[in-house]
Image 1 (tube, one colour):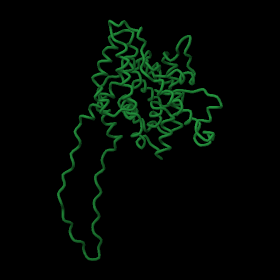
Image 2 (cartoon, helix red, strand yellow):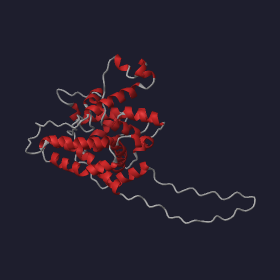
Image 3 (spheres, one colour):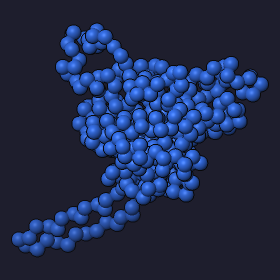
Image 4 (tube, helix red, strand yellow):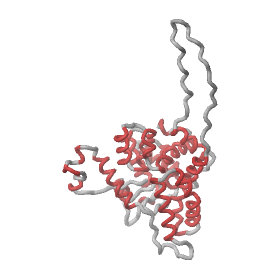
Length: 327
């Protein structure tokens, strides 16, 4: 999740030219979300402390450079770029998993390896063949009768359905993460208590592979990958103990935030897109495009988000046997 919260003074209302209050033109939460996401884009740079790992084990500066490229591609790159970076992502993951100080970061990257692999699969897939047709001569219309209508083309799968099918095939035989058997029964009541569909507990598989200690180098931590500011907004303390690392508290905050996003956007695909890309960005795209569904704005979302939503739909279908669009 890449969401930030900004505490600002009254001067923050005057962000655009002409001195007109922004809240008179756009919803406040959309303004705030958009500003936060600009800050997030500037702040979210991969940075590991070079002193964290001895240089005889790994060159941290080089690792910073490689993962920075991976993160940039996930945010703004094409599928071709993601596919070309797959070998580098695998090398980075192997380095991180082999060093105890970096294993909490490895969980973050491991779950995102799917995006590079799926991108590679899509890029390598040959385009579908054009259906063979042969010219036909229509029979002459009878006097006084209109000509026969041209038959409608057979419906084809929408891009969203094709993406979902790809993720379903990729994940259907994958075993749940190691901690899922212990944590899912424990955390489902937390989601129910927040009036959120309990099946959404599986978002932890997509975010962290159910590793309560998972962290990204940009600052997100825990099962549901809360950034510091968003964690505070949803009641999590960062000191003296970081409550984002507490599975129950992290899950409660995630359920509360998901409930808010669902109520704002009206369905789970849009709520999940907002969880990943930011509610300000999703709200702005809906307004700019006039769309009302994830499918209508997907082409304008970050590459990761375009894959994140169908991946989560596939995970819920596989783990719970339900379509999250009906929850």
